[in-house]
Amino acid sequence: MTTRRMTIIAQDPSIKNSDGEILRTRVNIPYEELGPGPRGYRVHVVDYDSSQRVLYHPFDPGDDADPFENASDSRLLEDPAFHAQNVYAIIMRLLSRFEGALGRRIPWGFGVQQIHVAPHAFADANAYYSEDAQGLFFGYFPGVNGEIVLTCLSHDVVVHEATHALLDGLRETYTVPSHPDQAGFHEGFADVIALLSVFGLSDVVRALLLKRESEANYIPKDDLRARVLRTNVLLGLAEQFGNEASRHRADCLRRAVSRRPRKDALRDLVFEECHIRGEILSAAVLNSFIEVWTRRLESWLPTGDEVVPIDRVVEDAYDAASHLLTMCIRALDYCPVVDITFGDFLSALLTVDLELLVDDGKYKYRQILRNQFELWGINPASGAEDQVRAGEVPELGIWERPSSDTPLNYECVHRESLEKDMNEVFRFLWENRKQLGIFDNAYTWIISLRPCVRVAPDGFVLKETVCEYRQTLDLLASQLRSVSDGMKKPEGMPDDTHVRLNGGGVLIFDDFGHLKYHIRSRIDNAKRQNSRLEYLWRNGIRDRNGRYGFSDGSPKGRRFALMHMRRDGRTELPAEWEDDQQ
Image: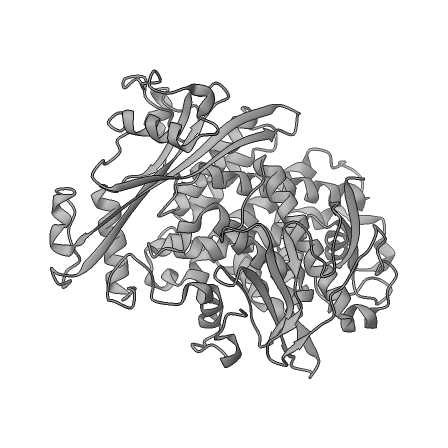
């Protein structure tokens, strides 16, 4: 047995099926021998309510039977055991999706293998990931009608918070103070994964498309135009996020449809707030999804019929969302280690897809993504038109490969060790630091080495080794010019202010140990560092000792909790959160 089927709530308890019951679905997750909790090898549900100081009895799923397959609505809403199963199954399904896309096991961001999950963590309208507490915590609160709203029963909330945890494990530096794009990326990426995951549930897509039960098997062809799908599906999904736990995702969807793209948006100070910034990323990807979906439909829609089979429409939605979801997850390996921009992410999306599918195919995923990002003034960080003409890159937006004009020295290393020994990779890095353009007066170290096996839709297998290295340089503001002639401190910053510069890169080796890509953020890049320090100085983002670039001054384990509270206009943590659930 390789999988286990478990019942989950498909969206949130406010969404009903045609019989007026809570819309639910059964999902396949990797099979494992579970202990009470459930407690598996990656997820351990510990149902402690810090507000009521109650520890719920751990749910023991036993064998592979699903005890909630035919459960009543009242049991789904009231039984803590189902709440435990719901979060366990959704998180394990997401983890499996990430590992399948990346072609390897992936870590959490806190150095141990199991993440703790509390379905009823506290009485507050919040849910968050905490690195220090090594867990995911879901709150509950009274809704506008007096009913208790459980964030652990909202599919998009669980996926959003679990994505924060997974992203932190893959790119721990993305929570380091940097610039608006990096601050917005964590929120935007988590929203993208949560929303695309919804379209991977056929029951939800079917419910969005059908306006009347009489249309059970067919849908009017006129409802499948891009403009209509964008309105009916994205706005429909926003309306279906009726549960107050999902109101942020609902607002994000509404704005993705109604907000007119602006090429100057990234320069507008209003868009510096991390959630608003993240909505730009969400809008670009979600509108790409609608356009790809429409293109898939146009490839087979009959010319004469007024209605078409809904199963095929749902299948195309699933395929489009699944492909984009895979691209987004795989792109993380092709993103810079620090100071990510939306342009970096776009280049990563395009490159990782090209590696597995040289031909963009009839649905033109890469072309559509380029166009949608461009509407927001986001251009790829690499692969300009002159580079394409010169043959340096095969397609617009693709990361450059190492130049043949500066050959790398492989004689110093054992190539078979490059995929398993960090010391071997560091030797390669050090011996080639000039060819790779690495600033050698900064503290430099290897942070990860990950062999991967990725599989394309046509079965093509791509083997790679992904290595990440970091650089830091701590100095006074008065010393910045010693790093690079163009580097300078922000106007008004005292000379004796302590600052930290961050840099690093990703080395991607092919199956033979040759370097394919070096995706870097140079620590001596004056333009990048000046922009970063100016943003931190202008917004007063410093640690508790007044240093810039070290941290934002908030407790590390409460960073995401505070981020979500600021979105809702709140600034103080409830008293029972002070221990971070430890």
